[in-house]
Image (cartoon, rainbow, N blue to C red):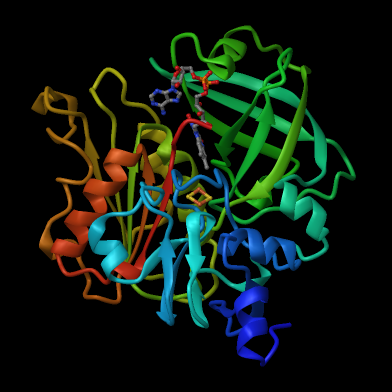
Length: 358
Ligand SMILES: Cc1cc2nc3c(=O)[nH]c(=O)nc-3n(C[C@H](O)[C@H](O)[C@H](O)COP(=O)(O)OP(=O)(O)OC[C@H]3O[C@@H](n4cnc5c(N)ncnc54)[C@H](O)[C@@H]3O)c2cc1C
Ligand code: FES
């Protein structure tokens, strides 16, 4: 706990209150040379994070009082306008005075049974899984289906991701579930094929039954419990967690809000999962869909020319109360965020998962 003596405060650090979406508050002390995320983990408060180096923006939160500032040159994943609006990446930010920080997820998102040591090391127990199927829904996309071992106790929320160890290597890669917890013990992933990539190469030789090590779940890209309109924007394999979120929305009880999915690939040839999207429109009449096939898309392809961000117009925004979920490459996320804010969306209601190299 922080001492009340000014000199002691100077030595011990400053008090910071972390306010979660469900109203829970946690008080921590952040030492002068310590990052806020490190301080929280050291004191046993589980926060979501991934890269711990200011790149992925998973740890973003909003400062509502006090003084929390990024270390110079470290908050590379935030726009200047976001920093001006109080957004901070807690993995690279110091607290310079007593502060209050609002987290954009509930305190229950991370299982508090994880020990502080595990959290501090960014590790949690790995579980065993086996490859159930490998398919090729698109020219540059692999679908990996796995089954987690019986009794592993694995659970997750739609929109989250796991880390998978590439068999035969010591390398781990992050992949978002395209399925929902209802399909457990089966999990499906959409993997973009990258020439020479460790996981990409593995998929080309994967066999049904192969043993895998999986760690997680991780991430805070989950559906908020609100009934506002929803906009989903996905680029390439960024469709994976978006499909999971749409399926979770579909299964919610009570009346469903209007929703719009804007999905795009870099070319019509790379396009995939048209059937998967069509069937969801059939299941959810309130789901409108825009499919974009890149700059060279022809009308005959049935795809819009351009990208999934340009496909959103001002009439699509159901007011500032609309919730937007974005997933794909960082450049698409930045463009989508700018575009949506320009169209009048509340920046605090825009949630994103960036597929940076993991
Ligand atoms: C939270 C999170 C969730 C993710 N979920 C998914 C997902 O669901 N589906 C998915 O396809 N990917 C996802 N990714 C990205 C994924 O984790 C891997 O980084 C990606 O699949 C490349 O792995 P690889 O082993 O095939 O290639 P690597 O061996 O990692 O890379 C091979 C070469 O390609 C470069 N490279 C790697 N990634 C990229 C990139 N995105 N753009 C340009 N060059 C790159 C590397 O620098 C390297 O030179 C996610 C990333 C994060 C952080
Ligand atoms: S965990 Fe902070 S930016 Fe990645």
